[in-house]
Image (cartoon, rainbow, N blue to C red):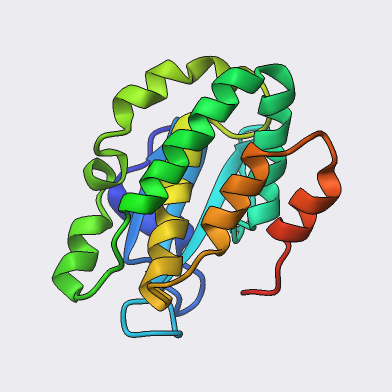
Length: 185
């Protein structure tokens, strides 16, 4: 089931909501980015997932979805998942907000989104065996969510707080769920 860029854009368009960027990930996901309304360079992230040879409805990723996936991975391989979370925290610390159209165009590029992390995908491939999401999908989704949060508020901290909460999770999911379901978009 191959899809070219124009088909990706069509697949992710709903009414007048047309993506600025779309990419197919691991053959199982389509991730798209739209113009948001909170700031001039705000982005909205949506995705579809291939399920039983059909594309799901367009979904907005919620922190709780990928956080639960990380918990599942952690229960299967705590050491590797902790290392993956450290990588995401480093990614957070080095992510800069989008400040111009040119900057947005540069950052909404699969090569940029995976820069410095594609080789890490191989290190964590065994985590693909557990949970719903692939490591590549999680890296791209995390980078986009980080860009979104930091673009709208440079001193943002919620995403990093969730990563740190996941990293220190002691088996009690209450704190993680509380952090992941904070009031937001």
